[in-house]
Amino acid sequence: MSKKHSATFNAALMTRKGAAAGAVALLALGLVAAGTGSAISTGSPLRVAQADAAKTSDTGPFSADQKQAIEGIVRDYLLKNPEILLEVGKELEKRQSMMQAAEQKRFIIENKEKIFSSGHDFVFGNPKGDITVVEFFDYNCPWCKRALGELLKLTESDSNVKVILKEFPIFGENSTFTAKAAMASIKQGKYLEFHTALMKERQVTKDNVFKIAEKVGLDVAKLKSDMENPEFDAAIKTTTDIAQALGIEGTPGFIVDTKVNVGFVPADGLMQLVGEARKTGCQIC
Image (cartoon, rainbow, N blue to C red; front, side, top):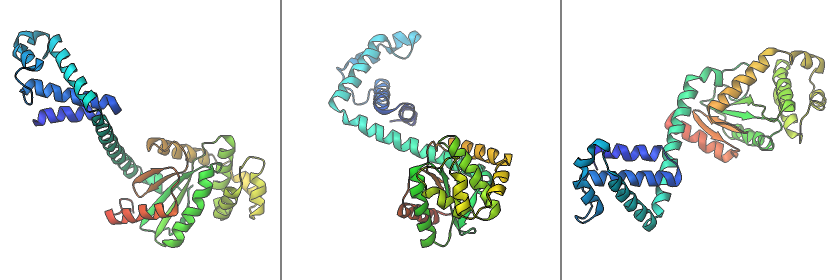
């Protein structure tokens, strides 16, 4: 197959999904065969159609009869070899995943200051760690509640990891209200205690946030006042924009150096991702 035809084949793979991708790709192969005569017997409909190609050049590269012949060959091939659709689908998914990862990496590097250096995000573990793990979370997300324990295990087992917690309230007003209270608690030096207590609650609401704050020793009156800071709304919007750009639509979501992982990841999985980042070389240090 020539480079030109190979490019046509690759383009077909990248612009269709599933079975459609397989059909388009195989059709491309049929077009190649029609143009070169390769792998087609002298008595095939395509060979006959090819002989008449010059007569129909004014209506396009193939006549109606030629197109029908190509479609018939493609259909017969697919019926006899349906497994090819699975192979094409897997290859398409692989290529799309690689393209998405490359785009995510580019975005993370270009926006590293917003992602890794926001003054409203809480940092724990080793602030000078060689690998950074970022979590996007919501206080009313059950999997986020589980993820806290996994992150603590990670930092306990690896003293050279930096963890950044990004308030990403997606479960309504109660979550947004709680996120603002949590960010305000940083000023009193009680964020991690407050964060941990909030995560232990089955659900956090406007009614119980301040009760929890009082239990962990926060000055509630000051907390209420500090929560009015408009910068918190701006910080939440920025985090939301970042998450959307990276394809993080739910919680929890993680960034490990420049790799995005959507969904819950246990401690051993996080350790593996950290190890891989170290092996390939830190992109954001």
